[in-house]
Image 1: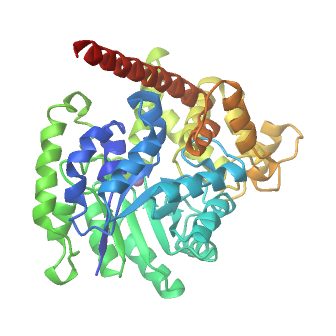
Image 2: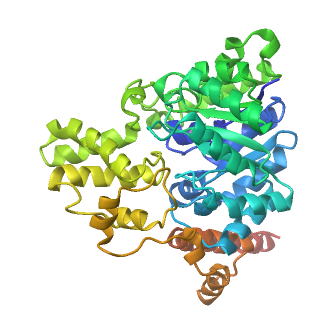
Length: 463
Ligand code: CO
């Protein structure tokens, strides 16, 4: 029987309304979510941490605790970018371990760990820590299409991930370019060779995700990731209400469709009122072009914007072709944060200035090995052109990082804060955002106390 990982409170609103769902708007449906019969809800990690601090001015840890208080039966799940945690660069092992420990302590049951390059060394520290704590761990295959990403490649990768004793293997199709028969073969082969539960995570971007899930279930997948319509489809996950009817009765997940209908009505109400300004028709529509060029939609609109500024809109096709060549030069990285930005920026520069005449710092770091090991070797002539004689590193990138936790704690104390363990970790990951956030909440706290004293004073005077 397939089980459901519901992404409404993380990937769905991250993909469809720029991660802007506020905690206060999640609270009214938490009791209902606990009655859905979902295996887990993905509700933390990915971009939520950054966006909460940067735009929503909320404490991510507070959201986690609030949801945990109200959701007891359904498991809580987070997306962790391996050594990058919920940020965009590699963090030292002491920060990674502390982050995992506190996430578990505050309520996360299931950790889904991935790495943009599928470099298992970048996932190992967080996976081992989560396993030691007793959490459920999903090791992730980041899916992409390229000449080196064959069935054999994925099976070898799955085996490597499974050797870290993860509980499940996830096939993560963030770009929505997985197709039903490749999906069927991947699930079938991983399950028969490794005897491990498999979860398929697909986006509807190419329009194929429901078909992928039907074939995944046929092949014996144990979990699939959906969200609740209307916060579904487009570049997000397909809606559970549709997947349910796509499967024959004997294969349907055991979920409570009445409760799901109630949640759906609530989502519809807030989406068309409070979140109306965030609804972008293009994002809620599938874009089958992605199946041909495999380039994420966001990347193309960025290119167009930049080309327009240079009056060179007619060169888009050249840039898109260059993306493919740069990917090949760099050993076919999947296009996901941060590799999509690295490849995209270099492809653009190559078209405008000539190939590798100007090289970004990120590409230099990438070629040096500071992001990890690419799926295929980087072309020798590119290494020479970019590093000019310097040698690439041959260790895991985080091996070069010094412990940071205690320094972060000391810095916060010196700045006059009295940080919790969680505050210290937040500061390690996003120092500037964290400081700004702590300052604001300090003032808010102070105002609250002053107001309370004033009210008390008034009431005394009243007597
Ligand atoms: Co996703």
